[in-house]
Image 1 (cartoon, rainbow, N blue to C red):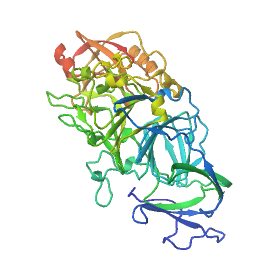
Image 2: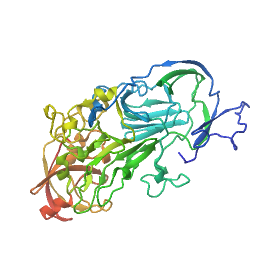
Image 3: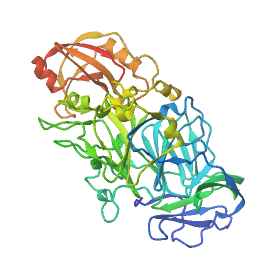
Image 4: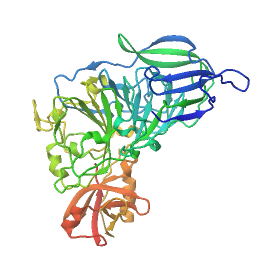
Length: 519
C-alpha cells in the first residue's frame, strides 16, 4: 500500500530512542519490501522481535500438484470438500489449484481461533465467501465479513478468529499483491477512473497488545525442496507492538465497494480487475447494468486464453454465461490456455435483451499453467468439459444440467439456504414507478403477502439482498431478481422489453403474478 497510516504511539523521528514511562527502550522493527526499495512500516515492540527459543518442523497439508494433462476445462465443486464446518483456517486449508507463482485453497472454519501464522513466501489475499469474524495481526485487528478480500502482507504474524463458521478462499502469492498500476498515480494515489478508492480500504485502527511467553508461530516458507513449514517459538508474544507507522499493513476491501465499469457493448475482463500479483491478476464480476447497444450480446464472446489460465469462483447470484453447465454457487471453473472458452450455447440467445446481471464471481487469471491440488482432484465434475458439445467420449454429458447458479445443499454448513425456497404464486396489482437513482429502470412494489414470503425464502444476504423470482405480466413470463428497497420493501424490476410487449408505461397499474424460484 502506498497510503500512509499511523496507529498507536511512535517517536517524532524514525530510528531514534523511544522509551516507555519507566525509561525502557522499545525495539524498533522495519518491515519492508524489495530490500529497502519499496513500501515499509516501522513497528515498536516491547520485546525483542528476533528472540526465539525453539524451531521445529511443521508438516504442511498436502501440497501435491497434478498437471492438467490431458488438457481440458474443469469444474470443481468446492462445497463438496467440507461437508461440515469446523476446520482450522490455517492448518486445514486444502490446495485446489497452484503453480510456482500462486496457490489457491479452500477451507470451511469453525469458531475456534487458528494458530498464530506467518506466510514468508508472499502476500495472501483471502476472499470471504461466507461468515464473519476477526483477523488479529501484529499491526492490530481487522474485522471481516462476507464479500471481503483480506489482504495480508508477506511475513505478517496473524491468526484468524471466526465469529461464526466461515468459508475462506485463500489466494497465496509468491509475490506482493497490490492495486493495478493503471489505477494509480505516479505517487500511488488511486485515480478517478479506478473502480474503488482509499476510502474503501480498511486497515487496523488501534494496536493489539497481548502478554505471553513461549508463543508458537507457524511459518510457511521456501527451501530448495519447495514449500515447507516451521514451528517457531518466541520468547515473548509477537503482539506486543505499542505503535507503528508506514505504508505496509494488512487491510480489507469488500466487493460491495467495487464500482463495476460497463459499456455500450461487452467489456473485456480487465475492466473487472481488483489486484495485481506477479504473473497473475484478481478480478471480480459483480451485479451490474449490462451493455446497452440495441444489438448487444451481454454474455462474453468466445475467447482463447493464449497466455493464461482462467479460474472463476462463483460466489453469488445467477451467472448468465454458465447456464446449462452444472455450475453452481461454490463452483470453480478452470479454463486453461490452449482451449477456447465462452458461454454455454443456450446462454447466448437467452441473454439478449437483458438489462442487468445479478452475478458475483471472483476470477484469478494466471500467466503460467495451473496444476490441480489434491482438493481440486477430489472436487471435480468429470463431465463439465463436454457440456458445450452435449456429449463426450462416453456419450451424452451427464454432469452438466440446465440449472442456474444456485446454492448447493452442502452450503448449509455455514448458513446458506438449504430449505426449499419455492413458494406459492402470488398475484397482486401495483403501480409501475421509475427509479430516480438507477438509470431508466422501472419497478413495482410487492404486495405485503408476497414481500413476507420473499423474506422468508431469502436466506442469508446475497448480492444487494436479491432473491430470484419468476414473474408474469400479461402474456410475458420471465425470470429476474427482486431487490430490497428501504422505503418500499422488496421491489420487482419490470424491464423495458416487458413494458413494450405489454404496452405498459410508468404510472400504469399492472397485475403481476410472482413466485420465488430456485436459482
